Every structure is written in structure tokens, then in C-alpha cells.
Image (cartoon, rainbow, N blue to C red; front, side, top):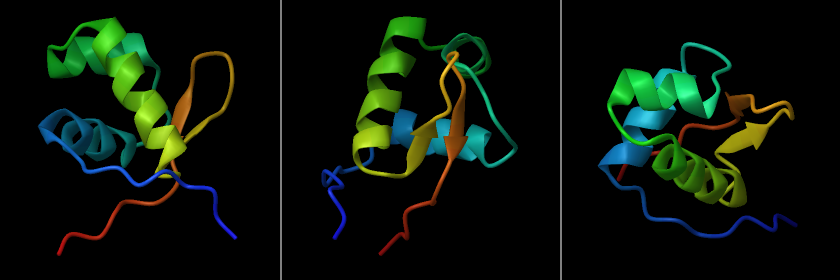
Length: 71
């Protein structure tokens, strides 16, 4: 049984997931590429981890686990 926390994606989440489709990234890189603050990207990544869309690989690296299906 999954412990995923339901999460409604916003535009930033969609953009972060899009970048993670290309490979492992860190919050600083994502913030620079997407023009968000590092703190905001980190916050969104934590929600995406809780929803089990993204995995924290430690050392500040994140990887896409599953891209959510769009209705």
C-alpha cells in the first residue's frame, strides 16, 4: 500500500517534472533553469516526493519516479 500524499500539480510542478524527465537534477540547477527561487523549488520538490512522483537521491539530487497522468 502506497503512502503517497495526494497533490494537485501547479505550473511550477509541471515545469520541474518536465526538467526531471531529462535526468537527475538539484534544486539550484532547477531554480536557475526555471527562474524560481531555490527555496521555492525545494518546497515544490518536497511535495513531489511526498506524492511519490520524485525521489530524493540524497546529496541534493532528485529523480523523476513517475510522471503523473493528466486527465
